[in-house]
Amino acid sequence: MGIGSFIKKQFIDVLQWNEDTEGVLAWRYPMADQEIQNGGQLVVRESQVAVFVNEGQVADVFGPGTHMLTTRTLPVLTNLKNWDKLFESPFKSDVYFFSTRVQTGRKWGTPQPITIRDKDFDMVRVRAFGMYSYRVTNARAFFSEISGTREVYTRDEVEDQLRGILMASMASSLGASQVPFLDMAANQALMAQQVKGDLTTAFARYGIALDEFNVASVSLPEELQAALDERISAGMKGGMSADKLAGFTKYQVASSIPLAAGNEGGLAGIGAGLGAGLSVGQVIGQTMGSTLAPQAAAAVPAAPAAAAEDSIEDRLGKLKGLLDKGLISAADYDSTKAELLKKLIG
Image 1 (cartoon, rainbow, N blue to C red):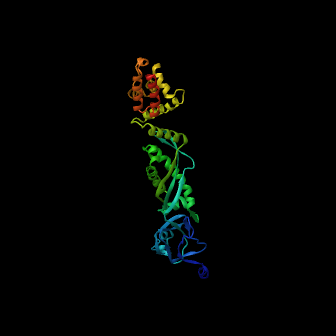
Image 2 (cartoon, one colour):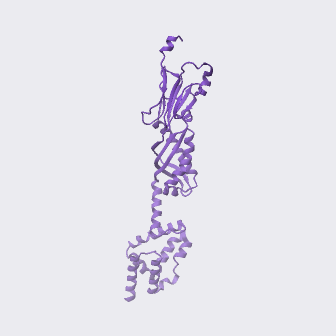
């Protein structure tokens, strides 16, 4: 190359990135036909990293500060180009800047329900939504695994890939967890903590650190939500026993009593029917016997065969026992008692 051609060349004295476009994570310095002046300056601002790439291979990485570009400050690139002997003229290399600022307020969600295994419900389909934040911490890995040689790589592009990683990690971490899903749904911080651990490992492979991760809401399938609502109602109306299944079944039996009150005679008719051979206690005992025979026997003693000959005083005593056990309401007790007393008095 003649001296005239050398003089016509354009040299770059200062390389820097002002980050004037929001949402850009990686930006390649536009070289065109320009070359970097030997002894030029590289300005890397706080929350930035600059990477020199030679023929697609990452050479030198620079953190925040002002760097003089010489053979001493470019050891890897110098070795690749054998500039330790010949580095007297400008050189050409691709320079990429990466933003290491925390990308905050990023939304995540499950477009479709995720099916996970659960020890309480066997299989659960769940949708969840929340927020997360992240930042690039390893520019070398980020360049090699994600951004590559593109001129600009944006936050939206990387998040398209992160969403797939997030969904896969969520399914595996929740499915492998020993924590019941109901506990996670009630404590969203616990659910977030469980998922964040696996996500941190998955993101690290791409040079990304997960800064924050939270679960804002969890929506359950309709059938599971209906079952939970019914179980909650059981706890509110009758109190759940230590044995949750027994308590739930007791609630279902007790829920059928208001239906009887809608029939002719209501619970008063049931009380009057004590003389016909069956007490309310027998009716409830027979209803519960198939699933909760031991509990029914303890809670509602079976009436003797001679119940048909019980006096009205005995029937009133049994009716009071049903009230004390919470199997009938005070209103039902009062109306049935009035019917029996009317018969007693005549």
